[in-house]
Length: 189
Image: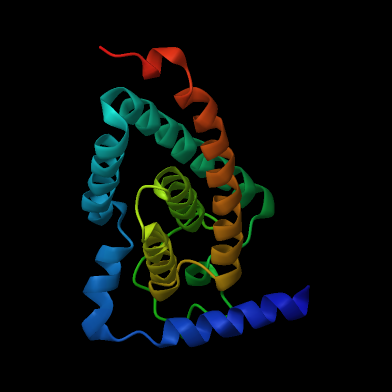
């Protein structure tokens, strides 16, 4: 386990060290959830276009529940595991690039988990309607890397969050199929 954690730190140091001051404002904005509001609105628009108002409202509620579950479960794991974030790790925090000084724990990344869960859900919901829906996955990969860039997550935090996100997104998608099949969502009016 120590070897894995040391390798994770070495990979983090390498990836974090790729940063450049001229790119810092971009990556700080990229890691801010509010920067992604246009993408979220685009997802809602696509749902409305293909499913209509009633089903879109149901899908938005499901996504809100998915986000809440993902975020709260990540926090439960973070406080259970108690891994220090890179910016708080005394072994490395004096020589890495730190653009944000988060104080909570690191494992696993709620940002990676939640963004991957939402994307997985949206992908499965729209994949039969949109030819290149797989491109949606650029967002969580980009978003996850931003967490390494700004100095607040190790690669294993991101990987674990991503795996959790895929599983959560698929489970919520399967639940959504049952909900969207309800007669009150399929009736006219």
